[in-house]
Image (cartoon, rainbow, N blue to C red; front, top):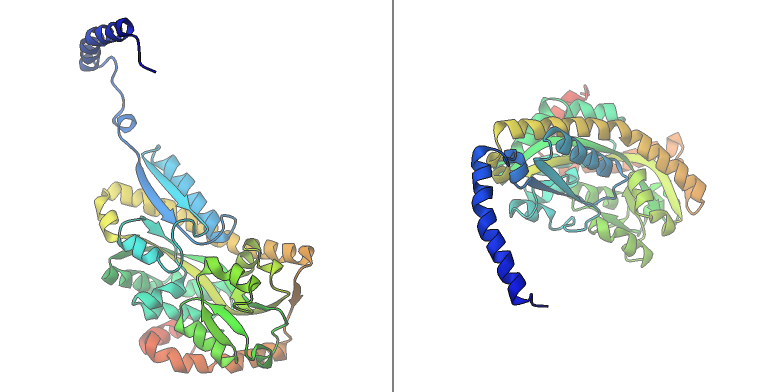
Length: 347
């Protein structure tokens, strides 16, 4: 509705008189504001594909809180969880195009974009404990892996645990024969695909966000996941059996783009690194407990039978997939594998 003419003129006259006074007040410092209050906060878009109540989701939320506190609101982390903006197939391209500033892809995803050395983390039964994993991620080999990302315009900022993966299907998977002919969802990793073929299954590469629906529709019949992912994605509603194989590790690397990183002052780079390191330590501390809580929840839900392989069954599974180490060693790089074994104090 248009303003009556006399009122409009009156408003113009008042503004005409007020503006010089405001300018004088600013000049005298009477209405001065901190520069931070006048500037727009720096927005850092952080996308990931899992739920917020997973180890990764909780670590990213902690990072968001720490950045806001330590920057005094100058920097704001906007979190896009659960494949809400980008998924497995396009998040790397989004980072390189500047559509997001930070990601935490699973280590398996780096193989298909030119970093096959990261697929050493996918080797079945390479690690027995998270302490084994940290001998690599916290040491010189982990630093070299992150440094290698520079050749694709990325800056590697750190590693984050989820935990060990377990097999699920609509039947127990206790022996290699149980896998025969099953279509198993896998990430885009040649190592994981080779692992499934060694067990007699058919690997089917699908985005993580599409997995539950694919299981419900029988597009695939089984998959592998840490317990927290299995629970938070509701896979217990579409999988009747879960076998605690603990056959391989799932972790993430937090990355940003070189162009964004170089646009920051050294002080802001330091602030983000320190906040992220604290958030990653928190995420790694809770990874085990989140997976333990998920197992309790799964048992209480009663929709999925949970199976524990015997020592003999576990050894047979281990022996069956050992061929993957030889088949994929050349692709990953013999020196990387040799260095990983040295970090694990294995011959």
